[in-house]
Amino acid sequence: MSETAMRVRAQIDLAALRANVRALRARAPRSQLMAVVKANGYGHGAIRCARAARQAGAGWVGTALPQEALALRAAGDRGRLMCWLWTPGGPWREAVEADIDCSVSGLWALEEVSAAARAAGRTARIQLKIDTGLGRNGCAPGDWERLIAAARAAEDAGTVRVTGIWSHFACADEPGHPSIQAQLAVFRDAVSYAERQGIRPEVRHIANSPATLTLPESHFDLVRTGIAMYGISPDPVLGSPADLGLRPVMTLSATLASVKRVPGGHGVSYGHRYVTPGETTLALVPVGYADGIPRSGSGAGPVLIGGKWRTVAGRVAMDQFVVDLGGDSAEPGDEAVLFGPGDRGEPTAEDWARATGTIAYEVVTRISDRVPRVYVGEDEHLDDEHQYTDTGGRR
Ligand SMILES: *Cc1c(COP(=O)(O)O)cnc(C)c1O
Image 1 (tube, rainbow, N blue to C red):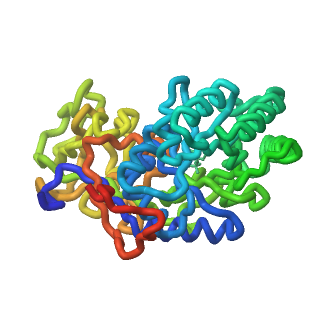
Image 2 (tube, helix red, strand yellow):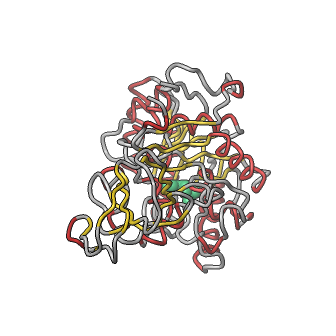
């Protein structure tokens, strides 16, 4: 299928992703970088993005779910790999056997991972997570002493090795927010307590993208970057991607399915929330909320067609929406760009976020499996043989 014949496509610029990883490494020159590729690489494709990030020097890859980490191993990723969102039942044994660093936030998880390690006849690599104030996952500071004691005992029994101590920020995208220094203080205390008890972590880490970009004292041994690696600013207050030295990786575009003249007073799409103000040309963009276009983009989302910004006319439906071209003409087969880097005049993911009352993280992550990803800028010659075996990563 030729690219122009595609109904819709998300073009993923892996050269831009590699450049973003290098730019982020330069922001944290004394730390390693973990490329966060949870949720299918924020919609960009986890396997291809992890591989490109490794090529650009990411020593670590991170996912939320163990299943996401196992899928990377199945695709040939052999570098350091961590996942953090566990529920009772695992899959601990598979993760231990796949040499994945498993986050542990409580005693139940330590017990389950230790049992899996015993069953596998291996030592599990675990990273202890302290809740320094996010109030989400992680061990409450009041339970830290017990968790550390249990982890030390498990290390002595040979079932686990604590490779990291880590945490996550609540408000790193609001520079100067008082919780940031408060979380750092709790984190330093938790690390020094663990070290006094004989824990010897390889890596201590708390920084996400906004902290990587704004707060060098948070970098420690490792920074975990997600959104910035995909070329998106964590928050407009931190500046545009270009201000931050980043380039958006995803361009979402569609092919017009229909163009027609209609009279004034013509209702458009379900509920007739848009009525043509006069005789005009309507273009049909064949993507909808099943493709991940927010329905809240009804009457609001921006689209570049024929060199001009237009706005979604009426409701976004499951598979399609309409744009009023006013006095302009277009042809079926013409391109409609929903968002991209912005340098061809197209809207950005941030523009869609503003128009739909969400954040750019959600705009890219919700693009569904119905949208083919088209990869450009790949360079297989950059593979590091120690970190990658091509057993299917390209399939
Ligand atoms: C998603 C996530 C990150 C990456 O956050 P960004 O703001 O996208 O850089 C880092 N750490 C954890 C625990 C996460 O869940």
